[in-house]
Length: 359
Image (cartoon, rainbow, N blue to C red; front, side):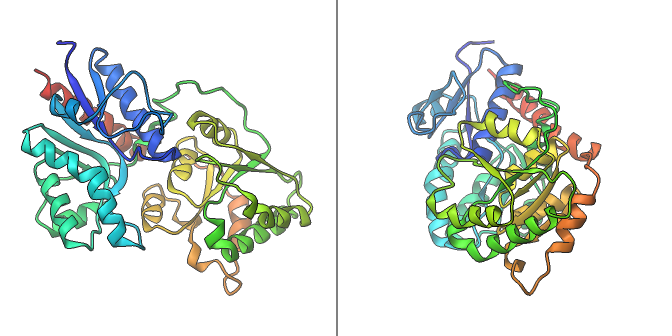
């Protein structure tokens, strides 16, 4: 194999956000384990800003044009947020669509593996994304809803897999420390500034349930990006103190700190998708309170929709206490073999695609 073979790998690597950076690292490691001499190019990364990028890599659009293929790895960037859809579309055009258009122009084979596609309400961006999808040799989406969206526009060749992060317990173990399950629960509650009423209500209810538990677990807040829990979280922390519980905060120092904290927890409560996916990968109980519908799609895939509650429901008109109590009393889950096999299929298809593109 020629040592100058280059695979361009692209994802949502524009901020130090745990889930997206973890996906890039997983796909990078899969490529290097199977094709050690290949150079992996990250076309648009700023390695000075995004400090957890895998090494060694090349970067830049020039190396994209020299690549044997382009791989879009897992993420939600071909969908949209519930709010600010116009801004989201413009941002994702520059972040994600341009390199696909360049690959089409320069006849570079494209694979889309494990990506959320749709809904896309802005017609100009939808047409561009659909053009990239149609010109891709491999299209794998991460849920049924993405497949339905593509079929609506005449694209019927997509495969469906579960999220690649679900392979953590089987495949991706670099730098993980073997830890016993500790007597603590993880709280990962993003967006307190905008969700104060809902999160105050949730944490109050959580503490009320924990007061009925013998040897109640310690509360551990974990960050999945730097400096998430600023001074504005003090009022949330004070609720916990007033209820008679101690807590600690695990500051973000990298994806492996997050992995190890989740891996040894009794249970995880989170507002974000990939913290919940990580918990599921390690067969940890996970209670999701979500804003984006993609989160409910995932928990439905793994059979955990009973403990996936919309943030819009969290107010005093909805009694969340029985649901939290039921969650604590439930058995630890085991990731279904079919779900894990589906996640591993991302790697199998990735390797086959790259092999077919090598000169």
